[in-house]
Structure formats: structure tokens, C-alpha cells
Image (cartoon, rainbow over all chains, first blue to last red; front, side, top):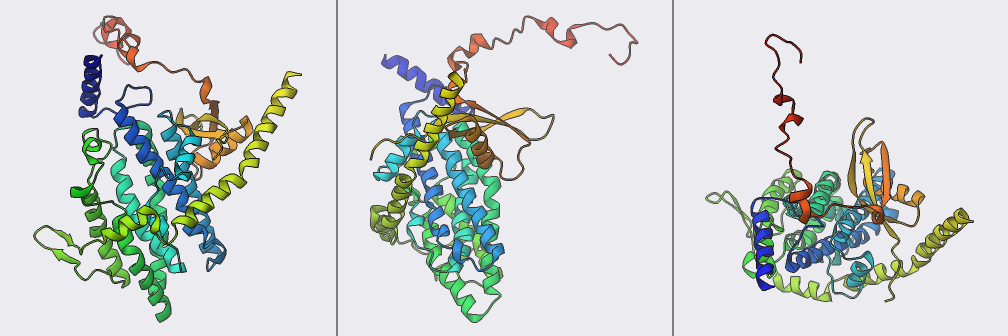
Length: 314
Length: 96
């Protein structure tokens, strides 16, 4: 029995080694399935919870153009959540279970959405920095070994670039505006920069989930590699529109050809993940109440479907 | 929390333009055909990705078993007469 398990694991790892994608009906180690369900559901929950800070500004968008763009972006985030839930469901976990894990706190979502969107400039900062950081991560995940996850990532990456560009456009516009508007944009930058860097997770030396994830090619680049990539491409974008990166230790390292950055506040990171962020409670309460208030819609849809079946049969 | 019905799962196949193959896009949840089509459109076709959609209840799909691949997808390499290169064409014959 144990020998058979060893053979299966070896066959699986050989497949991964050769660069083959793993598909839902393929044999896979329990640890691989478990890691994927955890990572993909967390990813899906993040897309959905991420609609909340942005939804907060729909009725207060400064123009009809801005409002249409924001609505389209939020709809995309919902769509991305659905791509990811459906990819996770191919592993044999149901949507009910996934949502229950979110509501009971067993499954997490990205820490970044526990911060509030205080001004219109935050909508710019979220699109530019938060979606920008997410893109760096998601581009890397396009080559993840699980087929349905990889395909969802390809689809998502196609749509994310609009998100980042619309955010950067908001920031650029404000930085070309009045002194107050510039101050508002810089304030948003100051608040969102560090949490965006935290999105990539702990330093490689402190990251608890990476061993098998690399061997099984779920993860293709390390947290620190991805974080560095994000910093290196974002600094120039900030400079072009006159924003200052709120890190006095940030400087170009000519030898390594990349930016050195200051120390990330990991104490804040674990505090917010642990539930003590500015909006943790609000985000979860909102999700639970909307889920419960929507129960009658699902019931009505089922009843309608049953009635159609019935009238077809008589 | 009480378990809540999240409706049935449907697979979505989309044709990007008339004449193209229908390609699997992903899945959605819906309680009936009409809702399945609408949800498929809203989820997988927000930027003109398709001109036609098929939705199929996931439970109706029958899939081959990866463990039978060796036998099931035997390449039949011994049947080389299935390939055009097997045949000897007369010298000088054109456009064949």
C-alpha cells in the first residue's frame, strides 16, 4: 500500500518535473490538493472582498465617466472571484464549503482589503498599487502547474491591465491638479504603499508554505522576487507623476540593478492578518449579511426551476 | 451557519467568432437554462470574447479516465496507412 503511494507520488512529481499541467481527474497527492484549495479559495475570496472598499465610492465618483469605470472594474473583480471559485470547485470542494470557510475565518483573504478607502485618491492608489501588485503575482501564476488555476490566471491577467491603468490615470490626474488634490494623492500613496508590499507575503526566509509549493510548481517565483519586481517597475511610475515613495531607505542599487527598500512592518502585517486591522470586522459582517439576505433569491430561483420541471412533466 | 444551496454547476463553452470551435471557458452556477446562459455571458463574455455560448449541466458531462490514457488513446502507430505519407505517388503527378 505504502509502496503504491510512493509510486504514485513519484509519477506525479515526474509529470510536474517535465512541465505537464495537472488536470482535475489526474491523481494528485492530498497535500497538493489541499495547498491548491487553500491558495485558490483565498485568492477567490480576495477578489470578492476587494469589491467592498471600491464599492464604497460608486455613489461618490467625481464624474459619470469615473463612475462607469469603477462599476466595470468592480464587476470584473466579481467575475475574477467566480473564475477562481469555479477552478477551485474542480478539486472537489463545493461553493458552500468555500463560503463557509470564509465566514468562519478558516479561509483568509488578502490582508490589503482590511484597509479603508478614505478618499477618491484611494481608488487611484488601489487600482495602481494594489492591482499592480496583484498583477505581478498573477502573471507568475499563469504558469502554475494546476491547469484550471493557470487558465483562470490567463483570463484574469488579460483584464487586470485595465484596472491598473485606470488607477494610475486617477493618480496622474490628481497630481496635475490643485495643491489639495496633490496632497490627497500623496496621502493615499503614503497609506497604500507599505500594505501593497505586504501583499506578497512574508520574506522567503519566514514563509511557511513554500517548500512543496515550489517543488510542485504551484508557486513559480518567491515572495521576495515578486515584491522586488513590483517595486522596480513602480518607482519610475511614481516619479513620472511627481509622487514620493514613503520609504526613506529606498534607493537604486547599481550593483544588483534593483531598488533596495526599507524594513517592512511585519508586526502590523501579523496584527492585521490576526483580525485587528481597521476593517476586518466590517468586511466580514458585510459579506455574511449580504449572503444571508440573498438567500431568498437562491430559494426563489430553485422554486422557479422546480415549477418549470413540473409543468414540463404534466 | 446553515448550508445554503448554491445552485447547480454548469460548464460553459464559447465560440469566439462564427466558424470557430467551441472552447471550454469555465463553469458557473445557475438554477435553470436561461439563468445559466445569462450567467455564462456575464461571467465569461464582458469584452466581446464570444458570439455564441453553450451551457451544459456539469453532471451531464462524461470524461475519460486519465489512468486509462495509455490504452484508451493508443496512438495506433502500427496503422501507418492512416497517414497520407504512407502512399507512393507516381513520378510527375502534381497537386496531390
